[in-house]
Amino acid sequence: MKTLVNIYAQMEENYGAHTWDGQGECPQHWKKKGGKIFQVNLDVDYLMYDEERSINAFKRLLQDESNEGYRYTYTEHEIVWHEPIVLNDEKFLEHVHAQTRDADVEC
Image 1 (cartoon, rainbow, N blue to C red):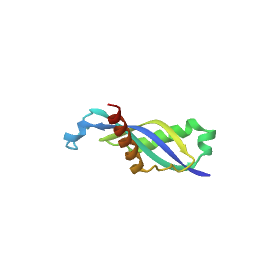
Image 2 (image 1 turned 180 degrees about the vertical axis):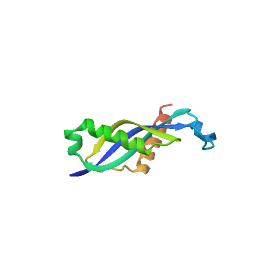
Image 3 (image 1 turned 90 degrees about the vertical axis):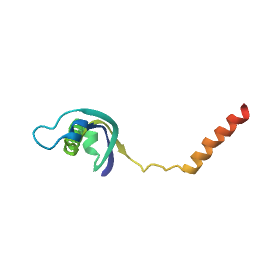
């Protein structure tokens, strides 16, 4: 059964590539820029019964997505068994503002 898998990666940007003219070797000056999520639909039996090979395949997929300007390093993965539940952003703001009002009353 094919299931969605999130692949989490550390994203790095090569600041040396900003001034590179494309000639010779690209200068290397990598800085971490946070995380990136990649997704793939696959038969989860691969992950369940051969996790090591699956992770190595994920790492190679991330290498394929990397270039002189950006590189992605595997950190972890997650099988997405169910769609996430999207919460209401307006209710979130109501709760935040209610806390502010409650704090003002305590003063």
